[in-house]
Length: 465
Ligand SMILES: Cc1cc2nc3c(=O)[nH]c(=O)nc-3n(C[C@H](O)[C@H](O)[C@H](O)COP(=O)(O)OP(=O)(O)OC[C@H]3O[C@@H](n4cnc5c(N)ncnc54)[C@H](O)[C@@H]3O)c2cc1C
Image (cartoon, rainbow, N blue to C red):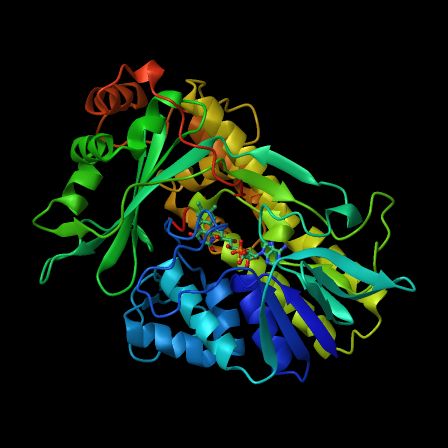
């Protein structure tokens, strides 16, 4: 089969190689020039590229199954596998392990494998339309020509508009937070800072979250996830403001102490983040153009502090491959089956984030938990600090081995905990108002006058905590 994959992010790269290894002739279309030999890869158009990523087992298992040499190369590069129980894996990395690594490093390896794959032809260009004839997809149009294919995978990410005419705009709700992050490398011989989670360390403050993501080869990212509506914190993008904040927030102060680590990136502000879900079908619930399948972030994005995006993307790829392996040659049936599966297995994560993000925004605005209402998933997770037996149900949800509605089984116990007056502890350090004062002073401007960070391209979906 001739297949066109549009978009060479994680979704497109894994899809292209996996299909080529199943005998498809694959054209992989993307406008990005790639990293070349340069150490830095700017990756314009993928706003999150240098922001912190953690890679859950669901994503890594697909990469290992389809491109095992990429996984081996990542380990050789210094990426750290963590076993399902969260401890670093030994020499034999068991299936079901996640990976701590910079996104740039992961994508560079995926791309290298795709470039070496004989059945994949990489085409540099921007696809501006999906072409069809006699009611079937026939390829894509580029600015200067076209690429033919019977199957077109649209893996164009969270903001792209390719084939927007084929399906409704879907559901998109602001996560209510924005990223400001920075990458560091441990000084030679220095030990990491405190570790409180599988991915690194997490501190929930009054009105914002701080996360340290450990990566490959002694590198790590520090993240302040701030309320996007609070313009005062937009000034964090200034070096002086970031440094003042990192000094004032205890977790960051420990990790970024110059004796321990040095920055290897500028301060990176992020754009608005959205939870989005867009199915495959048109407004009347029909397959718009048989032979076209949307995959990855072009279907679903979720609050990234949970680190689910690459997993929900590659889970879609895995399912699509299984359909094709089962002889899914009827293109209409293929799209219908993929859409139904995504509705059952991907959309629940989108809906879960809608509820948890709205609840978080309300709490950051000062609203108390209402124990009379069914708790949102984040409140269920927090309640495990009071009753560790809840982990029997919460653990599989956290690991994405059980869908969010599995948590309803423990709602009565969790409501009891909140009705007792208990509330999740808040980390020591400045409140959001105090942080705004620190940031405003350091940025050399009265806080309310600080302009908002420039709007970066939009996205989706919370922590591997
Ligand atoms: C701030 C942030 C942090 C995140 N952190 C995590 C995390 O910790 N863990 C995790 O699992 N996920 C995380 N995610 C989600 C993750 O980044 C995405 O799920 C992932 O990038 C999706 O991959 P993709 O290949 O579908 O899309 P993308 O990576 O966006 O790739 C799309 C590609 O399509 C190309 N393209 C677009 N339009 C066209 C066109 N018309 N023609 C040709 N090419 C085109 C683009 O150039 C790009 O190369 C995060 C997201 C954000 C926003």
